[in-house]
Image 1: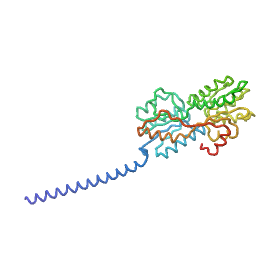
Image 2 (image 1 turned 90 degrees about the horizontal axis):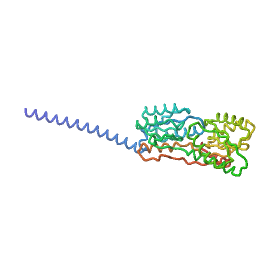
Image 3 (image 1 turned 60 degrees about the vertical axis):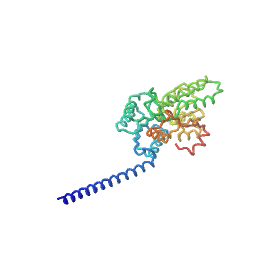
Image 4 (image 1 turned 180 degrees about the horizontal axis):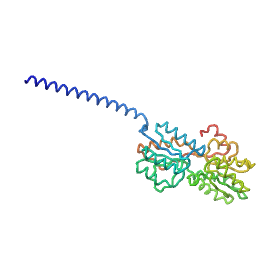
Length: 340
């Protein structure tokens, strides 16, 4: 009996050891796979494979905007991010719906270019409550609560307006008679429209000879720019200067000016903002006299900011893009190598 008990105990111990060995072997294999996976992810940017970026674009109203969209899409792909892209078609209600959709989808980060400055506090608070950081690109919002977004990446629109105003003031510093200016504004209520007008008026206000006789929105589009310029030409016998808030409106206005039998850049001095290829070509042809650059290639900066936010790093609340200006001669030199 004792012999049988001993054999039974030995068999039981052997089985326990066998099962233990098998389990340890399985854990070892699992541990090896986890280490390998960790090694693979370590060679890529931190958490890049898990980042989902929800981006809401204003629309596709201009060549500048198309270049901006492509830069963001290409940069997100290069960074390995899952990009959820939405086109608001220049309507704030569409953009708010898109942001709420991103929140429901639990994206990692939300970025957007606001159609207008006001009316964002509620949806931005919803994103904050959901723990989703927000980055503004190209355009700002007027919310007094700066904690609703991490940073704003884009141009200094007021400074762009100042550059346009300074060039005009220098050109007409010795003018003996009034210089009549018409202004094609961007989308009403948008940050670039508000700020480009503010900066421009700030500078030309010191020259009593410079008078803005008409100002109207052209919605940043070529068609609307042409339509509004036609109305300006009918309403005013003497127009010396056109200040357009973007190239597309300026290009539409050029069509209206030529249809009226006038020479753009000669009979009417034209100042524009953007410096996209079509605008630069018009400047090189002498139809636009001065262009203030507004760089649309914000994609790389946005992806860097997204990664920094995800990694929990400190980020500047305002990131300004570097930009320049172009006269007609400078546009000729820069045009062959222009990326957008």
